[in-house]
Image 1: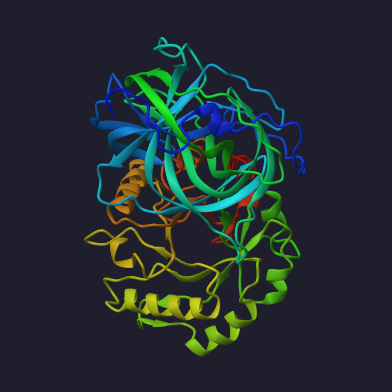
Image 2: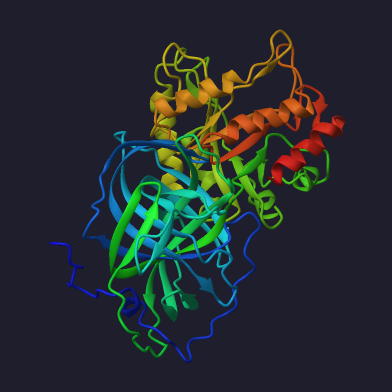
Length: 497
């Protein structure tokens, strides 16, 4: 490099911006930005470091956030993300940029997970994998090395590669988004979601907006808009906690839009006493309803609610299914492709120590169901009791594992370490997808949690990678949540979190 700015490709930030536009596409106005999202969007430019000082790779850094802890090797600068005004909403903090660094997680594999986020352009369900970039609050200047960023409200972010999960239709590009940053104004087409960036605390530091994410879309200049090139600005100087740097641009690459993670599936086992069997459950904010295979019941679910379809249990005394393959074929086929189906519930606590064929039988039943309805996942509740890791044998046998580790008993009170221990087992087994089964019942061994204890259950589970949860149970052993209005109010509040 010899200290000179790279000259290959398009070398200037402002030339990359391409842009003072006098007119452009006028698409539909986006929705309001969701509460809890970061303040500003950022337009991320692919950059190349050059000159002095050179970036020194960081062998190990530890960050932690809502998607879990991460130990990573920081290798090189990759991005400069500038605060951007999208659709004339104004920029809150124009002084704080984000510099993006390529990272290599210090573990062989990061389990994939599914979640849903939403922003002004609508909701998106996505499967996310390993993180590959870390965004760091940064000061930047064209004239020389700036001081470290002033006090600001911008978090660090770990950015995970993602794949949109749709119900058959591909992601529809978002066209004609008007954007202005320090380099100019232009219209962009958002072609596909590329990264989900989750807030993280660096080396024990706190997170300012724990519910705020960025959904980053690959961008291209809209062909419908005229473009005028600006004069060149060959380099920028940056400064952040990793030190000073000099960056030259290669291209504008992604627009990171403030987003929030929407609650995943929120289910409840059993039925209520209303004529439909689910009116009170729906009123409490649950979105997944425990049903059988009757298409009439499934289709009667109100908007925004889906069925967890029970297909009969696995008998741990005979080591056989209660219902035959022929019964499954006859009852699943009419539901195939029905958007009201959330998942198929195959079994409640198969016992591998009693039935050595349990995993093989569950995998075969799952394969049968998915041959009939390949667009919907299969689900089974797995007991936490086993001489070894109870979840490892079931990885790959079923799509979603239900995890029922109940913390509150008459003898010991509420021991939340049981939940934490279970989360550790799930991580050790690399379970890709799981739902928590939340205790809200009592029997001769387990006792009802109080409102505070119920919230503590949720707090521990929400520190995990759970995609959703199912409460056990609306009705059980002659008692009902309707008889416990304090807990019902607490569950309604949790369902809205």
